[in-house]
Image 1: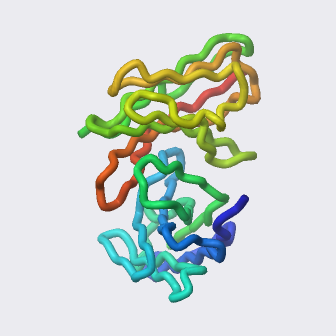
Image 2: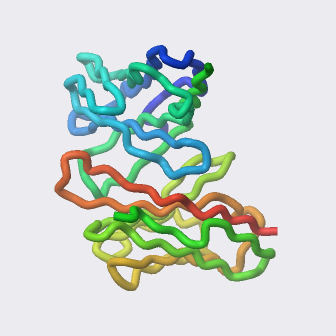
Length: 111
Length: 115
């Protein structure tokens, strides 16, 4: 059963902000929102995660709505190297908890 | 740290042959995961271990697949006999409990082609 819904693809101009939406309307109270990305031919890479507050790190910002039913990953100044598939995943905060990957959003950053 | 190491990076074999994929997790990581990625099914979990013990193998497609973790620094995924539909990229990942992120670190993957 799909726990998240993401648009299959998006384009973004280089240097502009990329805003990637995710719908997780059935998220449970103890589930976090995680974002991973997969650059072509590489393994997925952790980007950021959050529970209910907005989060920011060196890679991106995560905005979670107050009802927690959706979130947006923001890459503030997209570069060509940010072209990748971005996966939004909801999971309990537990190192042993597996990642359930959906289809993700294929972000194409264009010059 | 070298990260999660997988070998071989590419494997081409013929149908019916035995294939063994190898993974070395990051030192100190208690969890090890095997994922498979295909165009049709995307990324899916096959099996994972905690402290070398298999915890959940419900994702293993059939008896032709087996995985072992003889020690904390080595795991294998074996397919015997291999079939063309096993062609995919196989990823190994590891994680360590008690961190703020509880993130999984992925290896570079093994691209398997079964002819």
